[in-house]
Structures are given as structure tokens and as C-alpha cells.
Image (cartoon, rainbow, N blue to C red; front, side, top):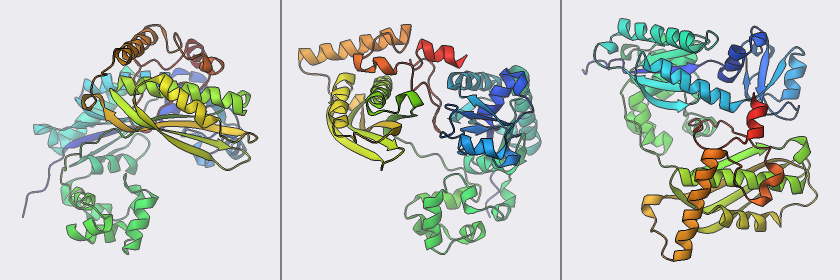
Length: 418
């Protein structure tokens, strides 16, 4: 029999993060039910809710209008992504005083690796308590976190969800897999509705049934080697994360009432695409495909995709967008605009431009990015974006937080965020 796997990962999950940051910097919000939303209109959704709002049934994704009905006293706070990213970096600095941060999972999640004597339960718990203390003292008392400690990253992340807020859960290999049996399949990160349906089709409806499968049976249930990896992780094995390649770069934005016309929505699409193109160059990628999607109040969603020449050029992308928009619905009232660049290729796999004019164009793009990085995202911009300068500010996706050194907020956006 192999010895039980030691504790290896300490995973930190900030509780109700956006709402907690707002309560930290605005004392008048403390102890009150609040929600954070991109805009304070009833048709948008809450992107965070404080623990005081949750007993009323308000959670992430609840429409703002419904939140107001569930709790008439709820306070709607306009989202300030730049503030949340700044606090994210402050939290990482605090964490580093206790343990080196191995990987940032998202703006409110990160993990650390335990080494040597740190893998013993008493020492791991001591470090977790020191982590909580460092975040409170260096960043703020209202920034609580749940910490999971386990033999691998999956189980450590599971641990953060077992006790909230301000929890501390240790899952040891000797308890596995029995300790997991009471969980629903969708309680596991990585098992969303689609994977659950696949498992159900194989007769697996409970975690106990899942854990009873052999490695081969689990691989068959997943339809790939991923299932075998799950078999090992559910038993405490520390499987290295598979390397991932960036697949898409995109932005989306719920339109404010003033931009819910076809013409004004187009200017927002231009701004979103210009931001995506800047990120594309910053991340040293090229693209061959552009997708535009518009959601309407009173019509079916419109979506179209075009193939581009392999490019990093904002103006090439905007020319394609202009042609795409020409055939968009003319009478429908738009609610949301999204753009996505895909079929990406890293710059190391792209030949340098052959012709002098193309090389000059690349130098021009680099100069524009340098100017905007130094003086703000809107220092140099396409004229077609002029009427949308004040829209589509920084947003925080579910993956890595935005890079604050990447121009994203114009000056008007920053003033609104204060």
C-alpha cells in the first residue's frame, strides 16, 4: 500500500470579494445588504452580493430589479474594477509575507504550495491563520477569506467552498474519497451542467458513484484522459496542471440606456474591438478570425464571424467590423455587444513582415500602444470610437485579472470610478 499523499496546496478564496472591497473602502456600507453591478439599471445583473444580502436570496447573476424586490433596502453599488484589481495586488503582497504565491487563479483566488515541514497539518493550519491575519492587517478587516488545505489543487479549492465565510478546511488523503461523498457533482470545480449531463448518461448521479469508478471507467465517462486525472485527484494524488494555450481574446458590454441604438452600439463595438486588439499585441498574439455578437431586447441574438488575414492591426479589424455591422438588424433595440478574436497564433510562430509598408505599419501600431500606455487608452484612437469613449470600462473576467499596466480606462472612466 502506498503512503497517503501529504498536504501540498493551500488555496485562498476571498469571500464576496467585490462587495467586501466596497465595504472596506466605504464604511457606510458595512453591515448593510449591498450588490455590485456594472450599471445601476434593473435590466443588468448583480456581479457580487454582500453576505448581508444573501439571506434575501440575492446572489451573483440576480437581476438588479429582482434584487430590489427581494430586499427593498439593498444598496446598488457601481462596479469599480480598477479598485478590485488594486486590492488584488495588495492581497498578493500580503500573502507573500507568509507563503510564496504559486498561481493566481482569478482576481479573488490564488494558491500556494506547501514544502517540507509546512506539509504537516499543525504547521499548515498555522500558515493559513497567518495568511488570514496578514490580509486583515495589511489590506483590511473586511476582506475575509476561506482557505482550503489538501494534497492537490482540486481538493484544496473544494475545501474553500465547504466553509464560508472566513472558513478553514483541511482535507487529508486518509479521509478520501469518503469525505467527498456528501457533495453534489456540480459542487466540484470543473463539473458544470454539461459534464454533469455526460456523467448522468453513464448512470452517475452522485459523488459516491463517481468515486466508486475505476480509472478506466472514469476515463470512459469523461470521454478523455481527463477522467483518469480526476480519478487520481479524488484520491489525493497531486497531478500537474496541463499546460494551456490562449484560445480567444474578447470583450463584452451591456449598453447603457444612452447607447441602445444601432448607431451608438456600433461605437461601443469599435471601442471593444480596439481594446481587444491592444491586448492581442500586448500578449504577443496574432488573429485570423473575428466574431461579433449583439443581444437585443426585442429580437433574436445576432452573431456573425469573418476570417481575417493573419493580423495584429486594429484598422484591419475595424474595417472588417464595419462590413459586418452593415448587415446587422436595423430596427431591433440592442442590449449587449460582444467581440471576440480567435484562431490565435503566438508571435513566435509568425514570420516578420516581408514588405516595407507592412513593417512600417507594425512600427506604427507599436508607437500607438506606447503612447496610450503612457498617456491613457484614449490618447490615440480611431475616430469611429469617439462617441463611445466613456463606455465599456475595465471588466474583470473569471480568469486572470486585468493587467493594470495595460491601458484600459480613459480618464473619464477613472473619475467615475472614484
